[in-house]
Image (tube, rainbow over all chains, first blue to last red; front, side, top):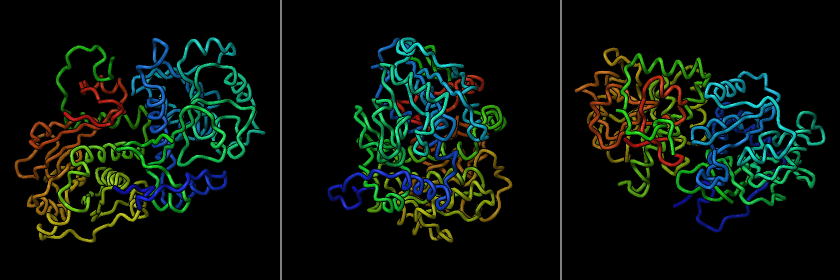
Length: 246
Length: 246
């Protein structure tokens, strides 16, 4: 059977890692040419991220008695994807808690916040600086702070402080698209070391430096012509799943 | 393990069938109280409908050489869900063809059309009145024409003609939410007889008269408080799946 990423059945060409410019061009094509809605893309990606978490950390394997997950959300798109991820994790029987220190004024992002609030997902008013409290309370931390657009050199409070805390914790971190503190292209030797990376659409160049256990790609919905134009060479997604493990 | 539909683990109460008024109140609650976006809901439901089709008609079991599916879309929300369903079916390796005789002027619905067009999903300019042509060309027809809001007595052309054709075809029909020509509450003895029904959020009253092979419910994302308020008593969704077979 053919697949969108490999219609010929021939050996797959090498997986493509995107530069920041290419990632932006791909997103622009989806939004402007294909007329995908921002809310629609965030819903698709957030759902896929939640599924990646269920694969990397199945409910039955969590070390804590409660299936707690801390989702740390940044101010822009990556944070909104984190909110959607938290909502779906709640539906999948996890117990997410959200830390969202700077809420976006964008109405569509506010709607994602309301959905979580109305579903009684707790929001932390501050992140404990005592890392042992985080290690003890949660099974996993989801880093939905900064995405591919972020310039790590320009990072400000409260995110520099949050990152300093995340660097010290011992529970696994799942990073969405680009680990916070990393440069989307060159990565970082000083940033966090996530256990799981979920690349949106395709890995960014920095993903070549990812050394964690699981690397998922979420982007099955990508039109074939977009995959071809950007030479993504994605592996075949299993069954009807929306994430694939590399 | 508890589930949102059955947190106590006790025997499930009987599945609830919604009146038209209850279905409208549930949708209103999602849109106004929970601030779900219309585009977001349509994406979630269309994706779930495509998954239901893959379960009822797996690629490997289709009788035709090509995995063709005809998706007939109405002018309103149900039609937009059909467009999203077609898009995901394409991603799942099916070959959807869309018949969408009256395109909605609503921009968000137009965006769903553009997504399909840009993915090279063919649109029929007319529906063959010779039913044998439909029987021969497609494996399945998806009826995304009219939903729970429609008053069957007020149905006009081109939909009366389309329904007359669909009543005669011999290939299986998948109806989204309410089979076209049926009243959402009382059903119909004169409408089509779908093989598969995909209920959105919860079955409508008319679903009690559904005699086809597969009845799916798509609405795993529904907040627990909404499920409780409307006493949906949904069965447990398997794994991380977004549809459940009744």
